[in-house]
Length: 278
Image 1 (cartoon, rainbow, N blue to C red):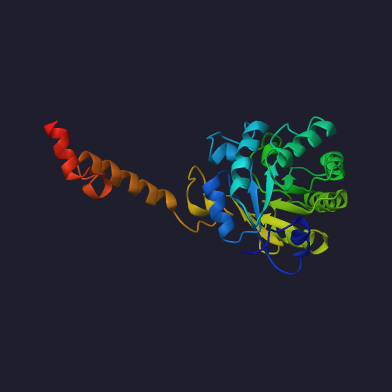
Image 2: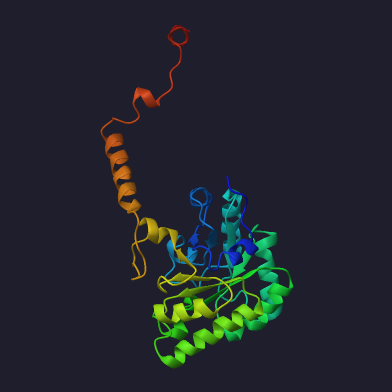
């Protein structure tokens, strides 16, 4: 197996090769993703929607994020594991941000954290980096600000908004971010940011010019069907196979087909006779 990846490895990949990142929220999923050679595994706050059933990402707590991060890091041997700072775990103060970021490494076993926002979170990013914790930035459609943004909408569609994104990307890199997620922005703007930004950009709905790509695992394999964003490509439809398996199980149990002798244990005949005669 390849040696474990490091943050410097991720940064050195810019301009050399495309990076890959997927979400994972539990041990078996992380095991599969890591075995396939994915570079980064994000324990995303998307956990709130695709695992816990909330309507958005705002409800997930730090304790829940740490719980799931522990499960993921227990499985991972190669990928860089990144913990996603949940809503209101870093916005209130710099001290709060550093302490919660530290929990992802100390309790969760992650190697880095991700947080959303541009210029307004620079003080938090600098403080977290100064504490020795690697930070991945996140610009564009930032789901924790969905109420402020007016819904899950493409960002940076005007020249003014696009310039803000470019400026924010520079600011995040200067503050010490080792990479930046660009979500739901025009591909032309992502290309500009990628060309001029010194750290890798990881796109999700930001086009092919980014230094890497990320998807939510449940979207990729077809396990979440409440809605499918335009930028998602489904590489499988696992939910249909799971439904088929469950229906087959139900039918076989009701018909007396399962369990068969093949799936049952037996006692030696002589011992059974002793029991009957005893």
